[in-house]
Length: 71
Image (cartoon, rainbow, N blue to C red; front, top):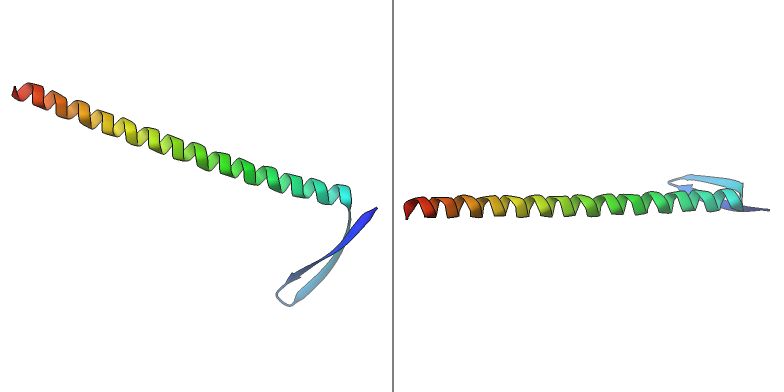
């Protein structure tokens, strides 16, 4: 059992015929790739936030050392 579908890109009109199993697996792969991309973006954001917090923490430590030296 298959399904017919068309892709229209600009002036090109291409017709395909493919088994449902193939189409399902392609859609599933695409969905998994998108989910992985979102996970990567989230982890990058978390890492960036952690780095920013670490930098702020270091600045606070440095300032407190300076204040202690002045006293």
